[in-house]
Structures are given as C-alpha cells and as structure tokens.
Image (tube, rainbow, N blue to C red; front, side, top):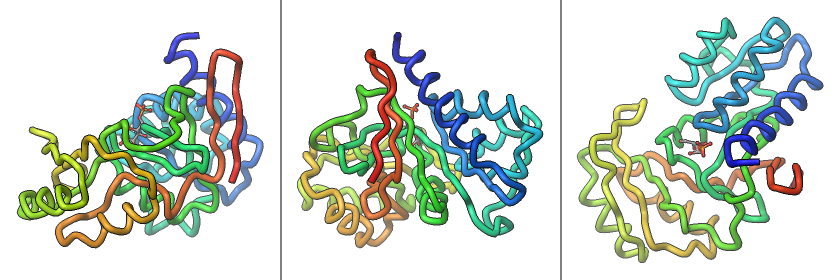
Length: 223
Ligand SMILES: O=C[C@H](O)[C@H](O)[C@H](O)COP(=O)(O)O
C-alpha cells in the first residue's frame, strides 16, 4: 500500500469506530489535513446517523457541509464525544506534532474539549524523538520578531511561513532543528512567550488512541 492507501485505511478504521459509538447526543470533532479528509469522506457514508460535527478549520467545515453533514459552533456543543484527526509526528507516548496545515489552534481547542481523541496516521509519522518535522507555532503578527528571538534562546531555528495566514488571522513560525526530548516542558515554555497563540505540540493533552497504518496492517496504540 502506498501512503495514501494507508491514510485511507486508518481513516476507515476511525470512521467504523465512530459509527459504532454513535448515539443521539454524539458530536464528532473533525480534524484537518489529507488523512482527516479521507475520514470526512467515510463520514459521508453514514451522514444521516450523525447529529452534528465541530470542524477544526474552515476547510474542514466546507468539506463537511459539501457532504450535507451538520457543522455546529463549538460553543453550541454540549460536549464532543470523539475527535478524529491526523498528525505530522507522533511518539510512542502519543505526544504529537500537529499544525503542518496551520490548523493547530482550533485543533488544540477541540482536543481540550473532546472526551476522546483518536489520532490516525501512516506509520512513517511514528518517531522515537519528536522534532524532525518542524514544530508550528501560531503567533500574533506584531510579535513575530520577538517570538523568533525567544525561540532561538530555546535552541530552535525559527522560520516564518511566508504568505500563510491562519483561520484566526495570525501567522505561523515553524521551529526547525530542534530535538524535542521533553515535549511537555517545551509545550509549556513556548506557551509562555508573549505573542504565542499556541504551539503544535500535543503533549499536555496527547491523543488517547492512535491508529497507525503500515505495510503489515493497522496497529492501535492507547494511553
Ligand atoms: O494543521 C494540520 C493538522 O495538524 C494535520 O492533522 C497534520 O498536519 C497532518 O496532516 P496530514 O494528514 O495531511 O499529514
């Protein structure tokens, strides 16, 4: 199977899992990116059974609505039963790097609310130490230089994502060349920098379940 087929396989497994748990109160949190897009397609197959979804980006909301799936504002959702999303990197503790597509802040908000966070990925994303993938940080535009200097003090190489504006009207700085040996500590250190909205480390609130697709089939890891 190529990488796309692996993404499809994990998305199907997550959709089957969500379907098996649906009841009349279920609100599904839906992620952003190429893996999540396959999940959205599978959701479309049982859209009449889904009460509502909360989308982690404008693009995901557009795709869900195009399939006729109800999208509600998070503030109108009494709870999110399950949130399904991809990741850019994961370690065996289910700590993640997310935000390659720039949707990290809304994703992190949904993850914070969700009772269960199911991450889906092909097994090329599983690493021993996070940080090979550049870590995205969403930043208020006027704080760009300040945040960049603070990132250098933490040992990373900040790279401004040219021409990209988040759904929240902010910029992204990607941190390169940082071996993230203590993800929980770095997540908190970055959040302490004035001007940072959030960062793409999901270590304080990791995934609860990880469905990985590889050449030998699917593997599920849980915390
Ligand atoms: O902002 C984007 C999200 O965090 C994605 O979940 C992440 O970038 C993984 O995307 P993909 O499934 O396309 O590899």
